[in-house]
Amino acid sequence: MSTSPVTVLRDVRPWGGARSDLHVADGVITAVVPHDPAGAPAAGTDPAHVVDGHGLLALPGLVNAHAHVDKSWWGKPWVSYGGEPGTQGRIAHERAHRDELGIPGVDVTLAVLRESVRTGTTAVRTHVDVDLGVGLRGIEVVREAVAALGGAVHAEIVAFPQDGVLRRPGVLGLLDEAAAAGAEHIGGLDPASIDRDPVGQLDGLFAIAERHGVGIDVHLHDGGELGAFQIELMIDRTLRTGLQGKVNVAHGFAVGQLAAARQADLVSAMGEAGITMTTVAPIGAAPLPLHALRAAGVAVGLGTDGIRDLWSPYGTGDLLALTTQLARLSGFRYDADLTTAARIASSDAARFVGRTAHDLVAGAPADVVLVDAENVPDAVVRAPRRALVVAAGRVVARDGEVLV
Image (tube, rainbow, N blue to C red; front, side, top):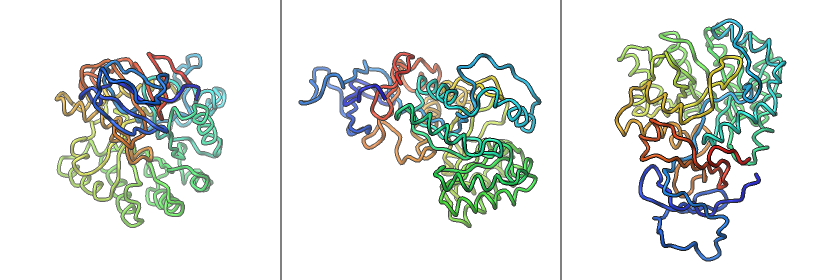
């Protein structure tokens, strides 16, 4: 990273509170102290490493808890939407055309990661396709792109079987190889409707997770009772294998579709098993019961899903703008609810990227986003331009310009 380290981020308002100075060392916040307008930098502090926040609102770096940075065509000429709708249709279309777009490739991955950094994302959990066509090459590509940014983005990888698990013999072996080689999580995809064998797919995934101590992150689009049944299978296996806190349900549309009593029972069981959820705030889907999930101890993360890829031309990588969408879809209007949405997109998502803390507190990574907003609800509603983005204690974007 070419930018110099920040030792003091002066005059910022963490979470819209009192003006404060954030002291930083080795990429970590060491202290949060009241701002003294007349105060001078501590002896030995290089003025070049003191950044003035001009009283702007400070949020923790945004956490994209569900991304696909290996498959975006961001930065390339416009790619028209084609192929058939539905999960099966999108898989087939992607498999037919990804090679001509250089997907997966370091250049396209770098392009979408840099755009994410520009808008304040400093940590990401990304699903990376692992299949019989690309093998583990996508994981290597993503790691190379992340390394090229020199710490501007912290990333955890989900080895993701986008084309199915059991229906493609050899994919379970690839997932096992990916886990053995350091992927933090392995993925699954609609065990019932894609593989037509929910017990078989989940048994295979949990066996790998037990063997290598990795997490599981299952894309579950199946709705209603079919989806709920598969979540119950995951709850049972999580408790039996001792993988509490390491299993995530992505999308989980079924949870938002169930009748109130059925939903409450399922959410309670998920909380007891330590299962988490990630959402991409999709327009048209039944909103997840965010308050009920959080009250039951089910951590919820927010992610972009694909960004301008062969699945959809939509997406910008702007997680704060997506937070606005999450809040609107959830019917959030009160200040406390709008602040909850901001925490879902930042501090509360620490666990989705392997962190114990991701906040504007001592001991947390020095990942900070500054915006010109009156308070957190104002920032969520307007998603204003990011004035400054600090990652691992370095300025990585300023006034819309990426510096890495």
